[in-house]
Image (cartoon, rainbow, N blue to C red):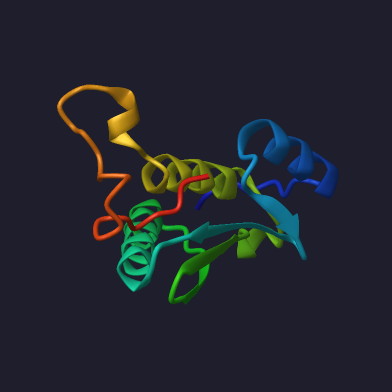
Length: 124
């Protein structure tokens, strides 16, 4: 059986988000992030990516999606609050969904920024 998870206080959560995950916010006991997309194709890609990461981590966010956005909400239900699990999954989601290989150099060039036919994520 897993050890009891410690839920962070709202002040601790706010401080960690400011330092580590600036695009996330605390609202009603959840940490939240909204990703803007260029349309349905990007929305589905974000939802599927988050689904894969969450299933692999065995920690499942609430997901709301529309044509050009995806909103994620993370909280550890067993702890009745935000725990290290939520921060770790938020970091992994941020790393993967916001990844821009064209900005890193190397062989992976990334999607063309000037051709809207290939745009899918509106990067922050």
